[in-house]
Structure formats: structure tokens, C-alpha cells
Image 1 (spheres, rainbow, N blue to C red):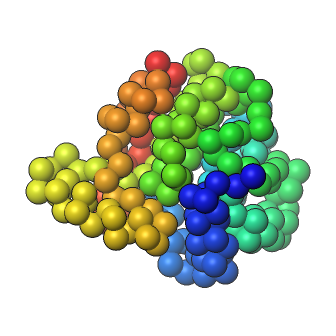
Image 2 (cartoon, rainbow, N blue to C red):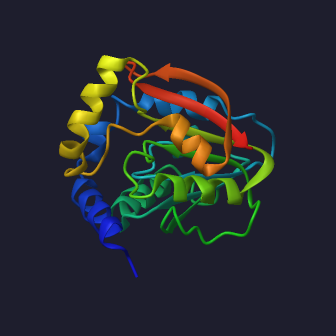
Length: 208
């Protein structure tokens, strides 16, 4: 059964699916490209992408990796399936509808877990973070691409103030990276700013 909070997110992205690329495609693509380039590449990697959306990352992956793309929104997955089929990538990128807080995979199933622009959207970021930790092998990469609460005190106050408003349209602006990592049992390895404006962070971590 889908929770009320998840149902809200699912409906929001079902409505956005056909126009998502127009509003969030090119403007956020540099971050996606940096995220995939940050993967410690080797043949045969098992990669989980949580929040594959319309499949904008699909052509960036190496053809010899095994990629599973998960999303909560069936409408977004329809767009992803269309893109992956047109690009001839159906053999390498497999799609699945699932809740990030209850992933249908065994422990340590993946070498890399990539999570682009998702953690501010999910109702339970720590629950999702713990699932990412569970399904990633101990020495694997967990790569988060997201906006996190500003380290600047004025910026943080503004983000906390507007978060109740942005939550109504499906995302929060007050997500603390340290709170997330600590609660999910993840250890920070690297962080860098991406996109323009550079309010987005590319965060690489491992199981703590």
C-alpha cells in the first residue's frame, strides 16, 4: 500500500512526466553528467539509480554495466522506457517501479548507488538513506546529487522559512546533509558544487 506522503509525490511526478525534461532536463544535466563521471568505473559494475525519472542519465552509463533504474512514478517510467528503447539501451538499463524506502533487492546487491535529485523529494530521507546503505556493497559508492541546507546562516534561515511552501509542490529546501548521513549510517568521502546556480551538491559517501 502506498503511503499518503508517497501518493502525493507520485501524483506530482505523474503530472510532471511529459514536461519534466523541459523544466529540469538541460538545466540539471551537468550535475547528472558529473555524477556518472564520478563513478569509479570498471567493467561489469552493478549500478542502481534511484529516481531515474525520464531516463536522462541512461545514455551516460557504460554499455557494459548492469543498471537498474527505479522510480515511484509510473508516468516517469513510461518516458524513461521510451528514451531507453529509442537509444537501444534496453539490454543494459532495466526499469522498475518501487519505493526508495522499501527497495525490493537483497543486501549488498549493487556496486554503486546513484541518487539524482531525489532526497529532497522523498517523505523519509533517512529511511531511504538506510535502504541505499543496505543494498550497496560495503566498499561501494553511494552518490547523492541534491540540494542541501546551506552552510551560510542567512541562507539556511531562508531555506528553512520557505521549506513549508516548497513542500506543498513536492520538495523541501531544508534537508541537512549531516543529519541525513548520520541518520542513515553513511560516511562522507567527497563533496562538490554542481550546476548553475551552484546550489546543488554532488556527494559521494560509503557505508559507515
